[in-house]
Length: 126
Image 1: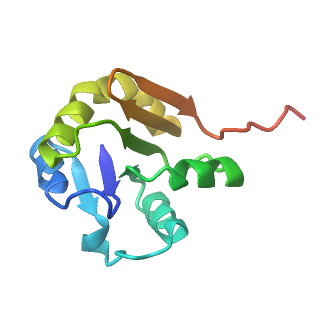
Image 2: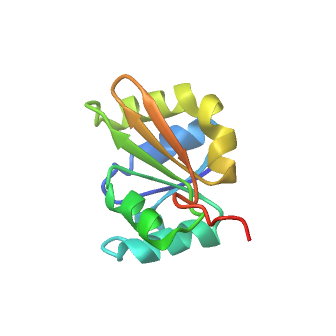
């Protein structure tokens, strides 16, 4: 899977995910440190990447815009070390990969994963 890591996550997370066989870059590598959320999301869409963050503003932006991409993984759990985040993401990735490929928000919490397909407010049939 292709990931773009937000600046609130350690740059040490990227090589851990790459070592597991994923194409992963940190916003630092894309010179997006300090960039507005919209620019980070646009980069994720342009590069067909799943945005990984701890910042709930991305979910709010997707809800407001009613966009169907990018998929977002939000860490909302106690473990904040890069090794812990890599382990929990890799452990659960098989269960959420199809949803992320289709467009979804996955919120990883201490004891569960909450998953919502995008867009968050689907348009009614014509």
